[in-house]
Image (cartoon, rainbow, N blue to C red):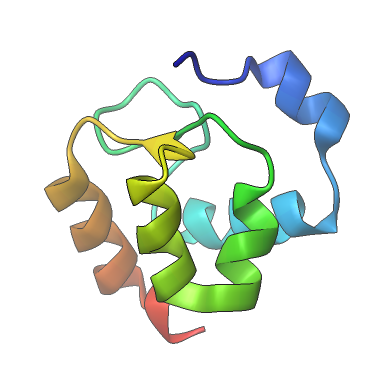
Length: 87
């Protein structure tokens, strides 16, 4: 499954996307970025699901194939260190 191009995501940007993008940026994580800890999104409904369901929605959406990350350990380390999980 290919990740959505940056252009496709930019066209679909809504408030859900912007909020999650800002939260991840605080942890040094980008959406469809080049680094091993950046997330690659396959389903733009991910952002609403994260904000409505929290960490459970984030985890279940990973299991559903909505997003992927080369280095989950680095991703979660950054998220936890930045306190994003507490928001």
